Length: 313
Image (cartoon, rainbow, N blue to C red):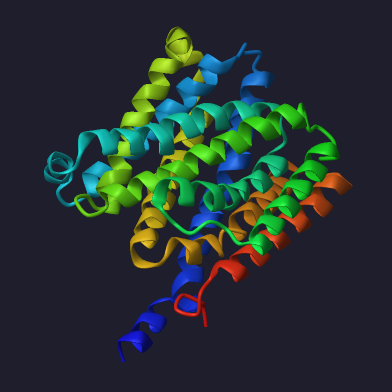
């Protein structure tokens, strides 16, 4: 009877809708960030890493405050949680992940960046055994990892027009997703003392302040950078961060992470589609074929990973 209830909890109808919401929210971030970069370019504002990190820091600090206001007992949960583990979560999920991501998105197309989010699942196959004590991937899973790498290589080789620097962008964004995966591992170590909403709030708030500090050289240009349209986009991105991260971290407390990882292919899929539709990008043959290989290998890997106890019905 208990096994039947457990299986009921992990049916696809319970997992797919909230994952799709996360995917749509995160997918909208790619064209929004690229749009801000375009606004700065058109208004003649000279921008570099400091401006990008300041923009990211404002976004995540606002998102963190939103979540901490909505959390039930954020201060009590903060006091009950190991500060070193919470700091590790903040450092990996927000600060390190996005200090790389915002730079990567500036030098690569939105569609390529959206596809590369899939590398987070491949990172999980490697990092979960090293840090979380999970079993090492089987031979077939290693094969899917290699095939996924081939797909990413094809996507970077022919990403299409206006791709910027696809090779460096790929390296930077894949590094970013690695830190994001480490963030999931870190959250697993603190979720017994702090809820997903409060943990995500502290992570976004602390990481946002860290990004503002990293971009502090651009603080005198804040008024020039944060024009009304940019402010509106920043507020939307803050809502995206607050909603998607808290929902995803909450899902990780309800469902096995390998099961959630099997649905991650939806995130890069929506990221690519939203970038193509909103930014009117023209992906090349390498991105389409490479993307199909990446998503196919991701699905295959997770079908191999899932045991009968967590298989979606």
